[in-house]
Image (cartoon, rainbow, N blue to C red; front, side, top):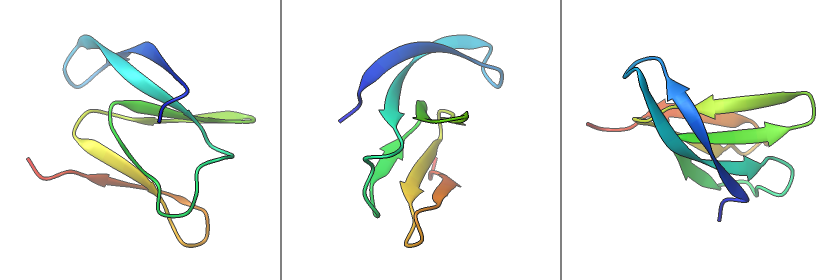
Length: 69
């Protein structure tokens, strides 16, 4: 469940989109977020654009992959 939403400008489409916002720290291994979304942590934010998804890998890394069209 997202913590909030925000508006993002996607350069690929040239449009403003509503994006889910997730805090990184509580995301468990295996969590999956579909773009557009933002994963926020201390010192950085990861933007996942429309057409991509992010998941939390076995070592806690953020894995971003293109979704099937």
